[in-house]
Amino acid sequence: VLDLVQLRMSEDPGISKETSAFLRTGTNVDDGMKSSQSMRNIEKIASELGPLYAKYSFCLKYAIKSYIKPEEKHVEEILGLSWNTETDSLIPHLDFFLSSKKRGLYSDSRLSVESMNGAVITQRLVLRIVGQMYDLTGRHFCPLLIAGRLTYGVIVKLRLGWDGICTDDLVNSLVRKFLFELLEVTENLIPMPRAWVPAGYLMRKVFCPTDGGESAYSAHGYIRSELPPTSNQNVVISPDTISSNSGRNCSRLGLARCKVSSLSVPDNEQCSLLLGTRVTMHMLENLPEDPVEKIEVAFISDSQCTCLTINPALSQKERRRHNVRVRTHRNLLKLSTFFEGILVEVYWSPGGHNAADLSS
Image (cartoon, rainbow, N blue to C red):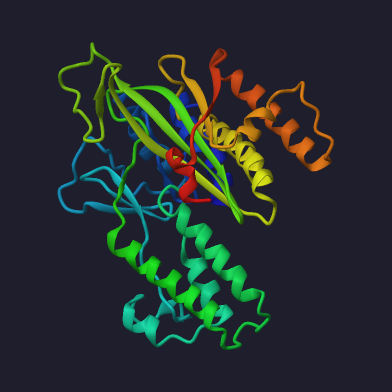
């Protein structure tokens, strides 16, 4: 119901087109988030939201701006993520529990070495942990998400039922190994910058490494941005900026996706390229504003066979592979029409240099 109200408010004639676009695409239930290359747009939206919500009998709690440091609270919960407004970074919730909820609350302590050593491994326990791993964009937990799904698939094959105790030593060791990896991640996970493009930088390119393995395939979307030589002296140089002969560049992971698959490795490699085109399209379609200058898109694969499937002159008789290739071609065509035409490139690179190899 609230989403319908937001849609109705976005059509209010008394607001600007920036505020209307924010209400349509930047809100989810009672949360909202917006990025812009102009502080003027942010100020305009923030100034219009309060009177607009009051007009429809709602109350705007607050509007936090990344360039204005709050006096007290520095961490805000939004869209399932923790946003540190002081460092302008995001991290998913890292509270995991082996027990079930009672009256909406967990009665036991968080995941620890002691709780894992005393835990009885069941299908319900594994599913409970996998269900608690939520990552909106996949860029924090992507390798861990695929590990959880594969671990759950292993215990399901034993057909123990929900509460049947697992007595298989190999499966027990796999589940406990996964739990220890999860605990290690909760203790050492580093927050990521909220912005794909640092303030004052120009978006130049989208890199999408893709990879397929024996049991899964994945695609990662990275945003390459550049600090212009003629930039304002007040621009803060991001710590992850790398200086080279081509200038000062910054690459940040924007989106990551992984899928379990029982197909062969060559088929998973081909599917990963299709997934990569979808990841890239999703990123470009959801940019809050068009890039200042024309950008490029590059796909990176460690499979020469997958690169060859892009050639339309090579026939593919197997129907499933043919359909994957057709869908890939269609997505590449759509990508080339974004922002009045962009250059789409495909590179081959050895597996050791492929970032998506970690997830697949």
